[in-house]
Length: 343
Ligand code: DAH
Image (cartoon, rainbow, N blue to C red; front, side, top):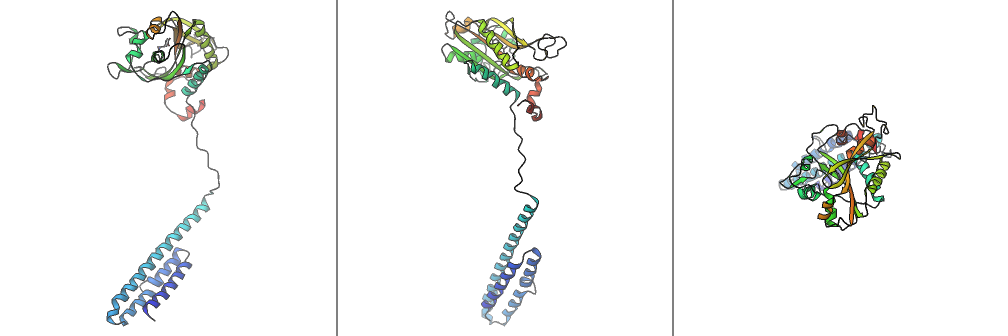
C-alpha cells in the first residue's frame, strides 16, 4: 500500500476511535495506541526505511504533518469533553430555574423623607422649590442680608472660607437674595440644602447640616400668614394637634424677628421629665421674621408696596424630633440597618 493510502486509512480509524472515546481514560487509550512509542504511527514510520533514499525526506514530512493534525484533533476532543462534563456538573448541582433571592433595596434617608414632605407641603401652597449653590460670595451670605462686614452677627456664622470673599454657605438665606434678584415680586420659594459651619461634632452639631429656607413676598403679607403657614407645616410633619410658638429674637435680615418652637412630639407639650425638650414642652425649629425693609429695598422691591416673611429651619432637627433619634451623628454614619427603618 502506498504511504498516503496507509496514512489515510489510519487517520480514518483514529477519527472513529476519537469519536467513540467519551472520557479522559478512553481518550488516553486512543492516544497511546496511535501516537504512543509502539503505536500505529511508529509502525508506519518504520516503513520509511524500506523506501528509496530520495523519497524518505518527503515521506517523513507527510507523516509528521499527519501526526500534528492528529494531536490537534485529540486536543479539541479533550476540550469538548471537558466542557460537556462541566455543563453536566452544573445542571446536576444548580437548579437554574430556581428563583433568585431578591437584591436588597435601598431606602430613603430620613433627611430626604423630611425634605420631601416639607417641599410637598409648600408646593401644595403655591411655593416653588429652588436650590442654590453651596459656595457663595460673602455678598449673598451677609452683605445683601443686611449683615455688613463689621456686624457682630457675622461671627455667629462661624464659616469655612475658601478665599477672602468666598465661603461654604453657613445658611440657606443667600437664596432669598438670589430669588429677589432674579424675579420681580410676588415670590414664594422654599430652598432645601446643605449648609456648613465650623462646629465641633457632638450629639446635636455637625459641620455639615441641612436647612430649609422659606421666603414669601407679596402685597399685604403679614405675620399671621407666617404663623398659619408654619402651623400647617408642623401639623403635616408631626400630627394634627401641633402648636407653634414665636419668641422674640433678632436677625439682621428680618424685623420683627422670632424663634419658632413647636409642641414637643414626645411629651405632647407636658414637659416634666421629657428628655427630648428638656422639660420645656417645646422644640425649637429655627428663625423667622418679616423681611427687613433694607433687604427689600436693596433688591428693588418697594417696601411701601410689598412685605414678606422668611424662615430658616434645621432639617436634621426636624428629623431627630420626628423619628425620636437621639444623636445627629446617626444620620451621617450610613448604616443601612439604621436607615432602613425610615422608608
Ligand atoms: N439664616 C438663619 C440662621 O441660619 C435662620 C433664619 C432666621 C432664616 C430668620 C430666616 C429668617 O429666613 O427670617 O441662623
